[in-house]
Picture: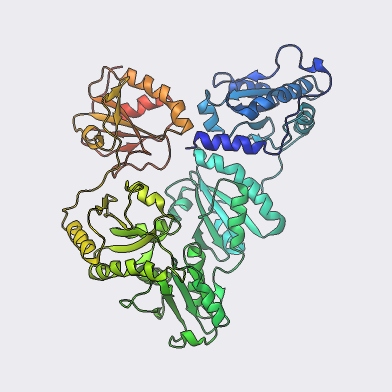
Length: 615
């Protein structure tokens, strides 16, 4: 879901380099009634079908640049109305016609799209926004009855040509999509533009597979959601695409990274030392006789998949620091800042007839030191997948003057970590760089030098109270009590409101969430929102009408919660706003995936509650 902030930013960026210019020329061009037609869901399809070429503006009433566009857009409409090949101009209030805006993947305002009789899908308008005469000049090319869309640079793959294509092409990004998928529709124009950009100066190809038609091919590749994107290197070697999807330039940048090896060749000791620039990332080094070593090929394949997470290097030389390792082998090392007397300096993998899964298992086993450094960048990919975990947060500084103090606190953690290493993961974090973690545990105002927080396997949170000085003894006692289940979890929560029901909607906070939502006698619909989210604010009137509709239904409760100010219990995957779940009585929560339309919501509720309501 896009917030109002993102929409506003997009609106600003769209005109960042334009100066506002009033239409010039004959003032009579703007006289008389407007010729730009207002469209809604009721007349949109009919209007598009009636005109060979339509340019449609999706706008928001509050958008400053939409307001700036108005006179120029009107002027262009008048110029093209009576042209030899006329073009119809229309506008759609996207804040009202949300279903239309979603259908055409509108993410910012104003967005202009060209609907042409010769094109099966709308074309993004990429011409000038002022003056009106320039808009008209740009659109004249599309007004030509003989105009046809340029051929797509995205290759269509089927079960018949898929294998041959990905085996023969040097590098390919493949999208598995479904025609009805909203995210796929939003991604499509970006993929088209990226394909054209990459074609100009690389051999990188972009392709797509309609997974609803090529169901067997999708099943072979374990496609479970849309869009699913994979990078294929020559020979069919596959890597999950982990780049951005918001812009064509982000896609291009990510794909071009694959043109170079993901591992740096180490020719001397200085190259080896250069791998240890960061102390929060494991270093993985391959030692080989030559490029024909089978383990080398597996190493490179693995490095392509994990290049964003680990530092990779490889050598065919006899380096003095590695002379105790016989080639071929892979070693994993941690930065000296995070090694300890309890751990090996090198972890060595040299299994004969190894598979890539064996390398994966080896790295997974040793990628985290006994007490490493958790950061904003590595917490998702390395640390938080290793719950339960305890994190000790303080002022980290490994520079020469402060290294001793930083290690003083870390050594206290090490003593405990060594005793409990088979039960949980331990790490340290910088209180400034990971201030979000302090805030998550309600410790942003803590005056303590050291704060300690923990997650259990389910993601529940625990914190060490600040009434005791942090020592190895007090920390070990806390961990011991935690293991015995004697520490209560911490829940971030607003105060329980004095007025718990407003206009038929129950107001939830962290402290009363379970009591209301997990009431086995009720079916509870929950609206998770963020105060700053524009889509949430637009949805609230619809949600209020929905609450009115169910006022007489005693077995259905509508509730809402500020998900930014309260912790959400496990079982509710809230990654964007608004998010809606229903908790049917005596069942698991079900996520709503439809439009924010009251009729669709009613159908969703009726489908998931035990007793059908009489509305």
